[in-house]
Image (cartoon, rainbow, N blue to C red; front, side, top):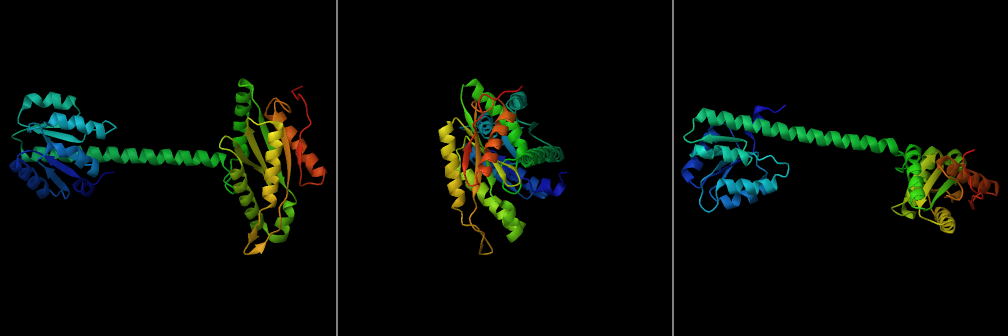
Length: 323
């Protein structure tokens, strides 16, 4: 809702080559309670002034030497990219009304004008202008809220990584893209060894510290084209595009080494070293769709744990398909 005080604070520019006309309008507006009224007798200044001050209304004379009001409106169109020209044309030549409106002026009033009529038109134009601006701002706010909600739906709140829901939407698309391009991708399933002990000994706050630091490390270790997700609990999944089995194993080993290198503390108390077990599966070698590929990575991860943890195992599955 636009209030009368807000309208009276609107930013207004008077453009006329005749100082007497400017003085008349300025006095009329200030007497009506408008508090932000500027003026210029130089039409060449209008665009720069509007660019700097974003006027809510421009009262524009048409007949001026060197540059007429029509040319001023053409220049304003380049600034007002949304197409709204906040212009009320004041002219002593009624035959120019139609052309002014066609160029984008929102209203035209002829000289000599009646004081209360022009004040009413100015007030109405400003009310519409401010309502439109408020609506645009609300629309932008709503759009940002929708974007924030969409991000929350696919983001793990603790680690700020993508979550399992996102993975279930993303991985099938990446597999389909790899299939079309006769490419490959790798899935790395990562588990933090003996994570429960950290929670038991130091508390869940310490466990959160570990998860956050590992998540940050994973994001730093992958390319922009790759994706890191928190799969659940202390498990993470990486999807690495266009990578060979050897390259995927090398990346897994470098991540394992980097995690071991983390010096984690809580309230200056060291948490000890954290090791990882990692299972690696490659499309198309180890699975033709998301479920099969994740199963292959999970089985490789299980084997890594069975082998004593703190190691990387590449799936040995071959040509896994439904049925």
